[in-house]
Image 1 (spheres, one colour):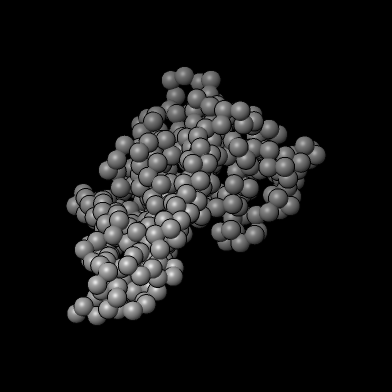
Image 2 (cartoon, each protein chain N blue to C red):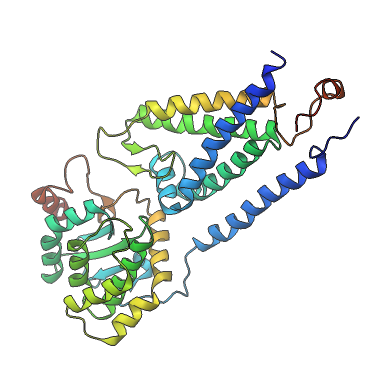
Length: 223
Length: 162
């Protein structure tokens, strides 16, 4: 049998081995990086037991638990915050509910930046203000607008003056935590943002419980 | 027919392989979304869906590359046909149950507002691609591939096609 150049089994097998090998070598660390890293530093008020969310009024009992999953770059989340944000903040202020914010980052690198900066603001006790400012200043997705300089300066708008905050933002101190939040969100079967659970049960998207302020309020109070 | 067949095979390889590479590559950058897309089909246990959300893009890239360069065509063709049939089952059950989700075929995915889901296009596309995969499984001898030509007789008759 005549051997043709480039058609011997060796080349073919080598090519197959390289393609499959390289992708396997990339797959394994990718899978591992999605495991929860319990050694990642976590910001203030975060509870690993509550999906690494930022918790308000965690100590209360007998009140509804509201879990909010959102991505700072998601336009619908900004609309949701605009509509229901004041009510949610009043629940926190009046101690009428436990509220847990889960800052997902599936829309890309600038979502990770923003979630990291929000975690830094939690350390300063300014998470709610900073969260509101981020949602109100939302830019085009991954357009480069949400770099660390902007995110640090937004902190000043929220009244954060400490040097620690800007260095926390610049260092990406809580990037590991951001990935833990994402892993927990995946485990909780969150398939869209915003997603709201009241006492562990998702409120009804098709019955406008997200985008009708009165219905949202009813859904929370129903518990 | 005998002369056209390897050329048909080449076309099938490039279309199927190219589509798989595009689909894999577009999911590659946003694996969180890819996991979300698989979960949204509500077909598999969450941990398995999350695993597949990461595994499938790598798998698509691997068999896509092998198809385009024409190595292990029979196996890659069969695997892509199986993958497409899997996708078709997932899409059909989502459609039948009235889920409102994005196909997530080329990145994206997750829940979408009521009435915005489109199941027919991906279903037709996957049917076509599955047929190409089946064709390559049956007739894996194609032009410009790394796989060996079938029998010595044809190899002598057809001169160098590498």
